[in-house]
Length: 573
Image 1 (cartoon, rainbow, N blue to C red):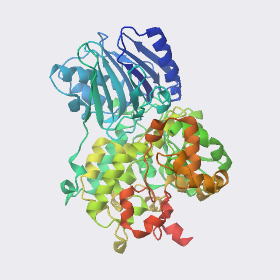
Image 2: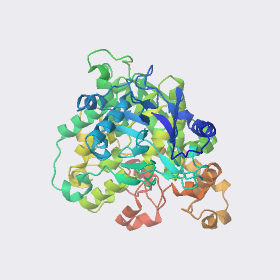
Image 3: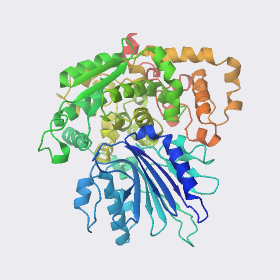
Image 4: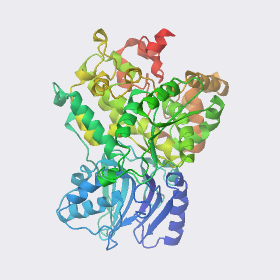
């Protein structure tokens, strides 16, 4: 994982020395993502800057990655987990210049051109997390693409001279591009700047699956064994690394399953087909919370059962509060739930970085695939349940993926998310949603189908632990304290006039108003505000799901415990 910055559509009269300096200065704003090395490419049509976090082939693999003839120049933020398989499947010889997993993109692009194909074909073969810009010097053409779910961030826009700009984080180009926006996941954009081409490109969606339509999943059964083995393969793929790594372990179901699977593979080296001993065979796990945090207690139980080298860190409310402005600047959103959860994750990433760990596996995505949020208890039928899952998956790049990636990468720690592996997604999302639904009369809670598939992998108190959103699980005093703090920072008069100061997605609570104010300090442009989605939510629901229960309208809060009568601990309290 790294950061990229590109400027395309340069003109003959442009001062390349000045533009190179400008690009380097802009890229420096996201160097936290790639503190290990910087690479620059400049020619008559494009500038590419890459800030590298070396995970695979740290001794080589520096970017931008160039073809042997220098005509292809590639800057990638991400990992291609199936790069070895893709290299074996190439129909044409390609002279690889590095051991980087990402260089296969150049080879696939060149093969696609030779065979008269479109980028859709090879992009759909990539199993990984990525955002890249590939500059074809011969054709004066750029190809920009982002992974199917949007695990890796990517922004784009145009500067005053009309040059096309892309960057891994908004902060690099928000001051340069008045039209800065998120590049959509699962899409690619191709444009030629050759003479006579006009420079008008097209945006294409390349990732579109049959399971998006509920009718294609109806009555489809997936056995517990098929589900379990698909997830184990996903975790195994994502252990591809040449540097020390660990797992985030909150003690909830999702992170514990990731840790359980990783523990089974940790002693062998994935890159050597599990023949040789891993360079770092001891699996380290990490958790964070306030004093008395439910997550810290549960994480220790899971770690003891799995035999990980566990590190449970505590933070104080004041430390979290102090970090808020920096957290918002790094994660580039004013969404309440995301900020609540990003703050402890940001603090945890700093501790992980201090221990020399550069990559972690995390449990994001499971709740969106299996309906783990507590409001799913209210889903009226399987069709609406499934359609909400698809909406949630489509929105992940704005919420959990954004949080995990930017909170961790603020300190140069790469997060990987096995639940969002594209092959696992195809298995888990093709099943009829009826199998995922809560059945109180049978005692089946949320994500029962996933829990049953991994029976015996975890202690029962972890395997059947009820859902805790991360911002709840770090300690319930965290959210209460944030609300109380905002109450002191924002007056009733200010909140009443919120729509005047913030016409885009006006905040509805004092907590939201406070975060929005901090966001505006870092990103004052209207276009920056528009990169963040709006809409009411309860317990992380989409706005559409508010119709499931009349009580939702009057209790809209992103905390998981806002769904009355569902969470066992809340009922006991």
